[in-house]
Image (cartoon, rainbow, N blue to C red; front, side, top):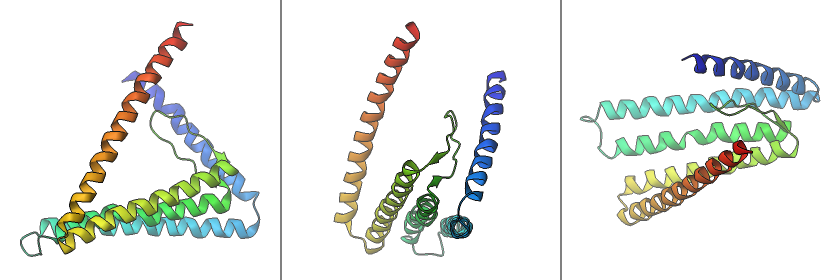
Length: 187
């Protein structure tokens, strides 16, 4: 328990420091960029609102399963998964225009404030990820809604391949990282 408290302290301070760095960076930008950043923040909140509404609809459809078409339940959940796309796109557009990636603090990772070309590439990566997520889950919802079993089978195969390859890569990287850390510690 003591280790968790000691780890949490610096992360919270770093998060506040990163927000202060972002605010200082935005203050140095032209007025048009600052206005665009404010609008992107509003649109990001709207994107989060879309996700909340999609979740509420999916929950309602799931709870009211006796009174709705049974196909609506998986469709609602697939559309909820796809609803993350607008928020991701707005984050990406904000990073591209601002040329600074909003600080994100992940557990166990040292937060960084990224500016310049790195932020632009991260923004484009977020947009690409959002489009892939929306296309995949939207296609899944369409396949279930139209009962296209061949398309569902192809999508399930793609998911299986991606998960298998992803797990193999993550296991390999984890093993190599552990070996590298052990070698680095022994020196």
